[in-house]
Amino acid sequence: MAELRSEGPLHVLPDSVVAVYGALSDLLSVASNKLGIKASSLYNGKGGLIDDIALIRDDDVLYVSEGDPFIDPQHEAKVRSDPHGAHTDWLTLNIGGRLFTTTRSTLVSKEPESMLAHMFREKDVWGNKQDEQGAYLIDRSPEYFEPILNYLRHGQLIINEGMNIRGVLEEARFFGIEQLAEQLEVAIKNSQPPEDHSPISRKEFVRFLLATPTKSELRCQGLNFSGADLSRLDLRYINFKMANLSRCNLTHANLCCSNLERADLSGANLDGANLQGVKMLCSNAEGASLKGCNFEDPSGLKANLEGANLKGVDMEGSQMTGINLRVATLKNAKLKNCNLRGATLAGTDLEGKNLTAGVEFLNSSAGHKMAVTTLALWLLLVAMLVPQRCCQHWSYGLSPGGKRQVDSLSETLGNIVEGLPHVDTTCRVIGCTEESPYARMYRLKGFLGSGPDRGNGHRTYEK
Image (cartoon, rainbow, N blue to C red; front, side, top):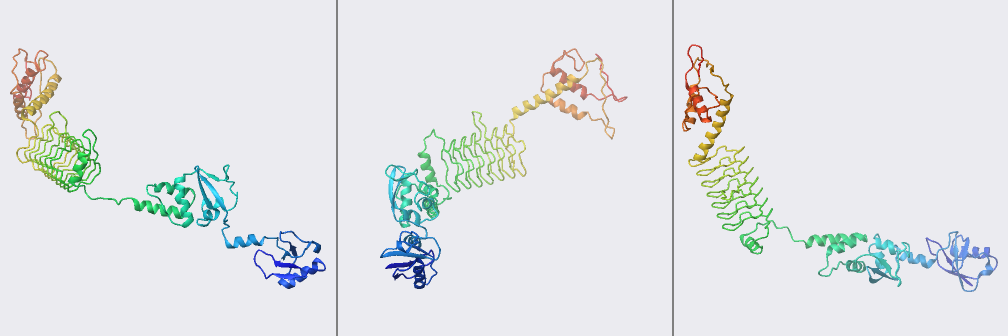
């Protein structure tokens, strides 16, 4: 007696028990009738092909095929139950020197497309290296691998307190566990504090000042102080570059040598503030109040407001000696009683400025001395260009109306040389090398002041 079973990759038919007699062809005919198939091949339980009926023993399990190669039914059933081909055998992983024991199905089932699943779906497909105890060697961080293995076991992301989530994220990306990587990215994003754009208060800033050593550089670059009360604070040498100081109260604050480059000071109140040596390049102080501010540094360090926006700024009574206002905008600014001695105003926009009495652009004595010196140098140059001859002829052009235009020049020169010393000399030739510079200027003044000869428009001087 033998048990017949239909064997094929796609179907299983009911088993039958038959008596074996006659030739092999007779047995195949009986199997075809019993199983309802066209039997053409006969195999034993181990997959051996039977070509002689004498090889069949009692109680053998025979497998009948329609011509397909033999497939172990037990293996096929296992494949059907696990479409990913996972195995339930145990294995040990050596992750960075630490041993982890798990099942093959754990590494394969949860994330079938991951690198771990491809490594352990079939035995030794990747040629994984093993240590002397048979554990598979993987050179990764054991600390960050543990939450990954737990996720593959139960599907939950659990990270112990104090563990760096970013480290786990990198391991998840390395092993190709995409779903876990997405969860970790969300967890990292949620763990970050929300961006706080609220302005810094006086209390917070004072606490910050007290906690900073006096010799340390204090950086407040780009911070938001909008509307804060920073009055009467010592803010020397602090970097406020590109900070938002709009509508701040900075009255009587000490901002000596602080950096306010490109800072927003619009609408701020800086009345009475100490701004010696301050850097306010390209800052925006439109509509700010700078009454009674001191920009003058006795040591010679000049405040720099080059390119600053000072539209509508009230700078009444400010000391601005030597200040650099090059290409700054002072449109509609109030400069009453300001001291601008030695200020650099090249390219400054002064449209609509309020220069009510009291604005001092140049010290009177210093300005007079500078003007006299400059004009004296020009006149000396003119005198040196006059040919040194005993007789000089000078011709003056006539205006369209026939009136000669020499009186105004004479009067101007008279005013300039009025305070110069009169030097007596016996030489009457203009440009004579024996004359002193002042004598030449004085003689030139007298020469130009004399009326020309009415006859031919020339005047002759003899030695």
